[in-house]
Amino acid sequence: MSRRLSIPLITLVLVLAPAWWAWPEGLPPWRSAAIVSGWIAWGLLLASLLLMIREAWLADRLGGLARMYAWHHRLGVLAYFVLLLHPLALALDGWHESPAMAWAELSPGQQGWAEWFGWLALLAMMVGLASALARRLAYRHWRWLHHLFSVSVLLGLAHLLWLGLDAPALWAPLLALAFIFWRVLRADQGWGARPYLVTGVVPAGDAMVEVALRPLGQALDFLPGQFVLAAFFDGPGFRGCGEFHPFTVSGVGPAGRFSLGIKALGDCTRRLQALESGVAARVQGPFGDFLSELAGPQFWLAGGVGVTPFMARLRAGALAQPVHLLYLHRDAGDAAYDDELQALAAQQPLLRLESVTCGAAPPDLSLLLPAAGELAGSDCYLCGPPGMIAAAVRVLAARQVPPARTHFESFDFR
Amino acid sequence: MMRRLFLLATGAFWLAVLAFWLAGRGAGPLPPAQPALPAGGQLWSLAEVAAHAAPEDCWMAIDGQVYDVSAYLPEHPSRPAIIVPWCGREASEAYRTKGKGRSHSLAADQLLATYRIGRLQP
Image 1 (cartoon, rainbow over the protein chains, first blue to last red):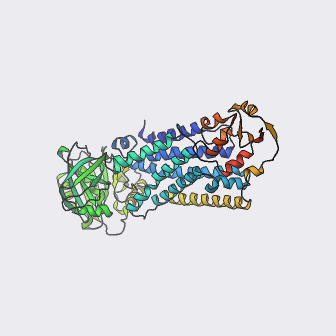
Image 2 (image 1 turned 135 degrees about the horizontal axis):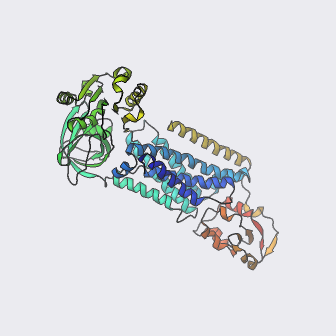
Image 3 (image 1 turned 60 degrees about the vertical axis):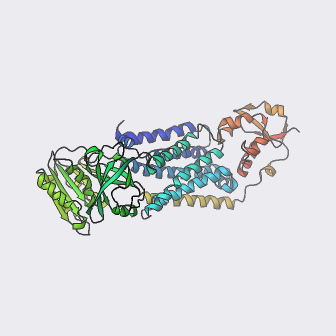
């Protein structure tokens, strides 16, 4: 199955199976619409929950974690929209009898526990989605409010049970609960992660450290350009936050050793700046295929900490193709690895390094990016803040770089 | 984009709920189911009710009234195995407890009344 089609096909199966099973025969149109919309919403929710499962093998088959999370968001919102139709269609079914009957179909006060559970499930989803879409909400609050979706699934299960439905109708909510447990236990609780030990921490720039780790058990296999989800725990003089966050691999060593570049971007990563040797960590991954298929001339654009995957590749050995690396940073303190990059450029004749201090304002990429002539035939790899990537994609498209030759990964996992 | 769609859909949903509430409120409360039934109607014996014990021809006796619920069965939210066994039988207790100790709602009472075909012979 093509990785591009995998998620739409799985979604189609998960949506069509319950809708086909519950498809009503000979019912009034709005009653039918109410039943079908309820089951389609369950199918979409199932697909959305499947895509939040964080397993390297699954991400590999479904086109990457970033793609899975993008679909997880899309399908969750779509499930909510379809779910909104369910009570309204029930009310419209009662409308042909009388407006009072239409309201009676909606009003939990005139119905029973089944309707109370249905309404509470919808409200939990509504508040959960409102918080999920609130960009300014602090991560810890966002994370806790995300559990409202689990509450919504439990209430949805109670809704079906109190309506008198049982097997096989309950497979959808039970499967949804299984996906939630899978995610919580394997990813959030770290059951699916491997144990590692911090063996070194060195400053890599302002508010950025490079952390070296060695495996305590079976090691993960990394490639330059990949990222991991890692959680750091307590050490002799360090109190970890224990939350899994994505970090890009900055170097791959022998015997399963590797290093991560960690920039202080939030509460947890700020605390990680004080990380010390001897701290236990759990690591899940590796994820992503950025820089995995390098062939022909390359243009690499790095913004600030976005230089990390390129560092991993340059540290891995001599380049086999010409690379132009444009490294943009706000100031000298923001220029992580700059000295090492200069040294690598001196050693590697195929690497042309351009390190540019841009100041606090967003750089004008139309002035900084190479001309169309140089870009012709090159693959362009971009890593940096979302605003910089969006601007770079626009400029590259204007310079006739085909979309298939522009590569970047999103780390917007909220 | 997603956020805007969410706000739009949620706002439209609550407006629709408000409209149903206003319309339902203007129409007054649902009349109690039993007083709405005509007192008379044909008398049926339990044996006659028992002759209609199939899903496509389903009568039930509930609280002294006889109902032909054949047309409603496909609409019933629970699976057929829960309700079909009560076809052709005295189902008052099952109706009051829904088999799990919970009674049906006022709206269900109102709906049931529309399927009444007579009274059960004492």
